[in-house]
Length: 527
Image (cartoon, rainbow, N blue to C red; front, side, top):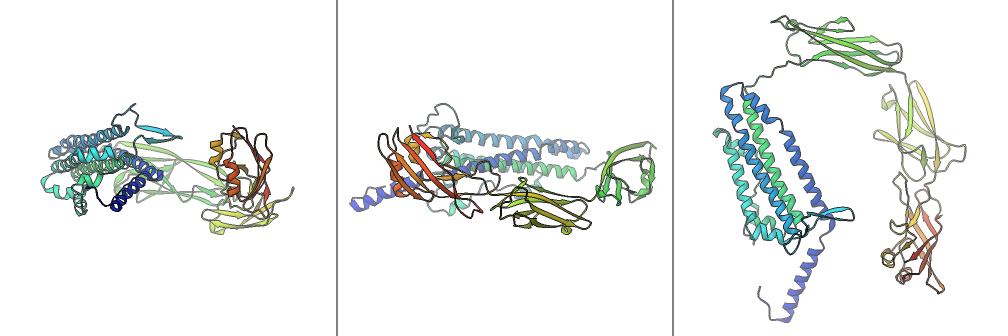
């Protein structure tokens, strides 16, 4: 770039460079965190792909043994896996090189660590490093080398297929390389520059991981192709049997009839030719379409068990195979239960979710209402109910949840309380001593509901700050709201070792409060 002679144009150019630098420095931590989340997701996706085809090669080899003409498909398994493994290893090595080179801006990786920990959060040392990605992948040509290797991988993989299947298989494989979009971008000379130039290291890794995902997906697609070629002439033999029970209900009410269908799993063929017999506790059952129906009346509650036996006679050899299995069901009586999802108490100002169940009764026949003390209402929400209350209950008084359904009426008592007092603190800090730098970093007082399981937030309405300088008279400032006023902030900015600050008459409101509550006083000594 030529240097302009006109001072005004020179100034504009310098300001543009400064602005560009500031924008580069202000990439938010949330964006880099998103890149890390995407990268972790791709790693899990790659593992899932590998797991999904773990048993496919062995299945192909087994199927290929059934016919001599299928052996060629088993022989293509290892070459395909070698191609995918080599390409995946190549990408892994490239990621490691970038991380190692990006760990130090001077090109020297001081201790070999790929990550650093900041306040418990792991991150790459050079996550914002754009120089190493641009240099290695664009200027050193490694990006274009990667492109050619990916293209070759896909071509060599497809050539392993039968000639008449290659065009269809090519259309099924992931695109991997988009060699058209970058050509429409003005000023971009090649694919590598379009994808990697001035790309931060943390953003480049998911891109490379995506190519790795395409490679593994291509391998999985090819293995499925081989399996389909073998499977077109593979016979499925059912040589394992299991007795299956399909009851209408596994939990029934006393007086109702228990009904279940019993059948032989994986059964195929006509009943008259199978030689199958099913019995329950020694009593033979008639078969219809391979299914035996079993029912028995109930007169008492509790868990009931029965043993089903299936006998299969081989029509060719006369051999009898016997399979047994025990099943159970439970007989109960109509009942109702109401339980608080989070506590055995209702709180004013927040949603109090409850669960209501009535055994043997359809949910649309269950009616729930509020009564007793505490006021409030109850509303159905999805699979449960939500209770809102308005008035604390006195000792010996309770809010009542009433449940009614055909054949039953029941209720449960609950106490009603205000949300407990929150704890006043600076940020999440409850320390009584702190350095002046740390103290000055806070700009507001907040109210924290500790160990409270409900979604509620309390608001500071105001407080009085007392500043006691060492060997000086106290200075008092009244603050409205939780955020420091300019006068309060001025007192905070005076903090130095030995000074003391008192937050007095702290007032706050929580959901459901009719008036502000007093949170007392906290004191801070500056060290």
